[in-house]
Image 1 (tube, protein in one colour):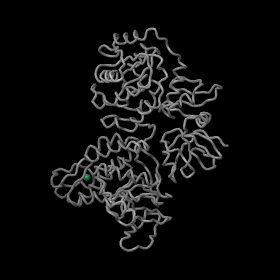
Image 2 (cartoon, protein in one colour; image 1 turned 180 degrees about the vertical axis):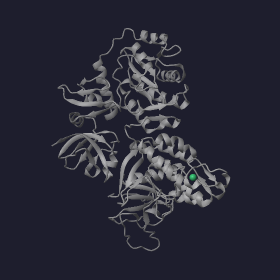
Image 3 (cartoon, protein in one colour; image 1 turned 60 degrees about the horizontal axis):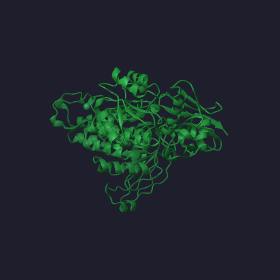
Image 4 (cartoon, helix red, strand yellow; image 1 turned 45 degrees about the vertical axis):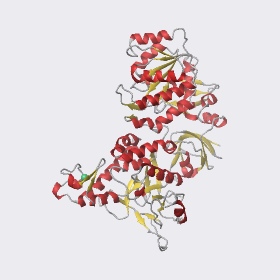
Length: 595
Ligand SMILES: [Zn+2]
């Protein structure tokens, strides 16, 4: 039972939370047990009840102003598993804020508010060892315990530590490095004697260079660490920590390795990555291709989405800087030539391919990439792979590639060759020249236009596939009518009862209770949150949850049901977090019916 830590906001595995002590401490935070800092940047809230080795200490007495680290045995990193297990600590259930010291082997539910990773300095500095230890511990402890890595934080690594899922760090390493004469910044660890100018404007650095000693250096290091942590909190709040990390992690090779290894542990990062965000996704580095949001979109388009317009030609077009694509000048020109006679799919780096029905769906209208006109080998490889997978399941009678020369054309030729299909190329010079557009229109001659209602119905179905799973579009919305004007669509059943509305900002469906009932009664696996017998108003808190589907992600549409109520809302936690949390908002309800 976690009584003294609560998570408020999430950005991937990074979280904004609160240690609910006599004085609240916002996390991620700098904490210690010695009162090293007088400027209020370090929260002196830890109380170490001491080691259990060699003698057994008395039971600790705690209070609600501090987190008492429960008595533990210190086992160094690398202690063999069987030894660690033999000496695993058993923690008493206490009614004051407490912390349990664990290793990856002994991590579990110790009913503590914070989990302290013993031997953290043995992992930090090595990408795979760190990711192994961290993900093992995170998977083993309840989601709403704060993770503390003692003795490791520096201004340079703290953003990546938090990105990986660390909630608490301390200033010890920054202080020790300072007293050793190392001047730490977010990008370097300088020898103090090498600096003839101090590259910082913090209070400790506001003095003549020749009077700046190692004690000042330690004070500066703590300032730099606290400032970086404040920046990280802001980034989490904005949903933009990853954009920052892709640059910051480059300051040290092990940090870059850590971010890449985390991307390869797709299961860990994907579980923590929201389905949608308000913030724009800035795709400025090659690492952006491996972002879980990008991988998830590509996976869902190729595995869940069903091409419903493949009884007519496919036109592949380049993406536009303006989003949604259909609002751009170039796409309006393509549309004038196509006139709803073909299915339009945009090719783009780093997203892959975007069928016209999913142009609003996160992150298709929420990314911004660097346009140089040249594609890297990685981008060509990624988009080719997605396009090929997309076409493998489609049955288009003709594929028209209305794309410019560089990159796009390479990808089309590669995929055409690989699939043994012929593509028709309609662009001379540039896709929007009169010649090119004339070629495109001529190529579609003889095809009739499909109806607006077909387009709208298939948009609802495509988003349902993407959001709820393969087959959901046909299963949940076989017989719908649509109201409104795209993109403000709502879907009704045959009797005119509303089932869902298209949330234009994120390109996802918001279900009504009638829509939610269809989902539950269908063969499509529903994402369900089972609650105690009460009627939720506004939100469902974690303690009221009996069970939740594992595959729920933050931002997912979820069915909420219990003996007293049936409703639908949007998830604020992922499924495993709902199961193991004892605090925090789990679901924001949209519609609730009392039973
Ligand atoms: Zn400074």
